[in-house]
Length: 60
View 1 (tube, one colour):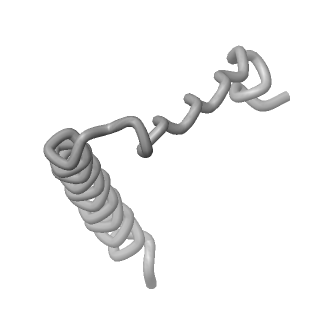
View 2 (cartoon, rainbow, N blue to C red):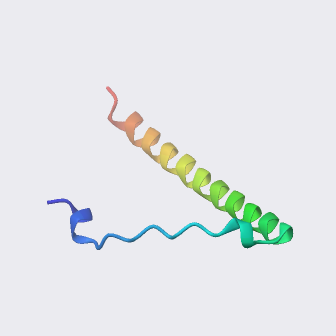
């Protein structure tokens, strides 16, 4: 059994209706999304560095 099996499955949020948003609101939304992408990329780099460090310890 996986630990993920025990957690309730979350529904994906519904996409925003972009047609109803103003140009300014769309620009702010893009900025928010870009900030979230940058945050996710930073976490990926951090995890890759940790993984690479662990792999270098166990290489013969």
